[in-house]
Amino acid sequence: MNHDNRQSLNCTQRIQRIGIALWVYLILQVAAGFLTSLPLLFGWHVNTTVFMAAAVFCGLPALALGMVLTGTPLTGLSTLGHRTLPTLLRAVPMTFFWSIGFSLLWALLGTSSQQLPAVFSTADKIGMFFIIGVIGPVIEELFFRGFAYNCLKRYSPVFAAIISSLAFSFLHMNFTQGIPVFFMALIFCWAYEQTGSLWVPILLHVINNSMALLVGWFPLLIILLLVLAVLGLVVTILMVPAIRQAWHQLMEKRALFRCVWKAPLFWLVGVVFVGFSLYMVVAR
Image (cartoon, rainbow, N blue to C red; front, top):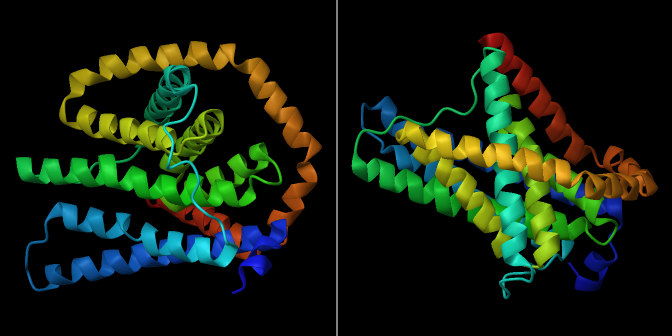
C-alpha cells in the first residue's frame, strides 16, 4: 500500500484498521492458547510461562499489521522524555488508586479480579515475572500507546486516549480487568503526552504488573499499595481542573465519535467484550 495513501486515511478508516489489528491480536491469542494446550491432551506437562508467553507475543504481529495498514510510526522510543520525574510522581499513585480502588469494589460486590496462574517453582515465578511484568507491558504499550494512540492523535489527543484505552480494555475480555485498565490506560496516555517518551508509559505498566505479581506472592506488600492508592486519590483530586479541561476539549470534538460508529470492526470487539463479560458474570 502506498505510504501517501495511508497518510490520507480519515478518522473512520483509521479506527476501522485499529479494529482489524485488534481482532488479529485477539484471534492470535485464542489460537496460541489452543495450540499451547494441545500437549495436555496427551498428559504432557506444559510450563505455566509457556501459556503466558504465547499470549503476550501475539501482540507483535498485530502491531506490525496495524502499523502497515495505517502508516503509523512508533515515536517516543528515542528519548527518555521531558518532565519525566514529576509525571511519574503523579502517575504512579494514580495508577494504583484505580487498581486498588476497583479491587476493593469487586471484593465488596463479591466478585473476583484477575487471578494469577498457579506456579509451582521459583523458575516458574521468575519466568512469569519476566513475561507478565516486563515483556507483556512493553508489547502492549507499543501496540496501544505507540500505535493506536499515535494513529488517532492528529484528531485530538483526548479522543485518541479514549479510543486506544477502550481498545486496551476490550483486549482483557472481562469487566473486572477491563474497567480499571481503561482508567489506567488513560493515565498512561497522559504520561506519554506529557513527556513525549514511550518509555514512561512502559515503565508505569511494568510497575503496575510487577507489583500485582509481587503482592500475590508477598501479601504484606499490599500495605505499600494502599498508601500509594491514598496518595493517588489526593493527586486525582488535585488534577480535577486538568480533567475538566480535557473533558471540555473532548466535547468540542465529540463529533469524532461518529467515526467509531462507522467502524464496525472496532466496536464489534466492544460488543464481544460486553457479551463475554456478562457470560463470565452469569457463569459464576
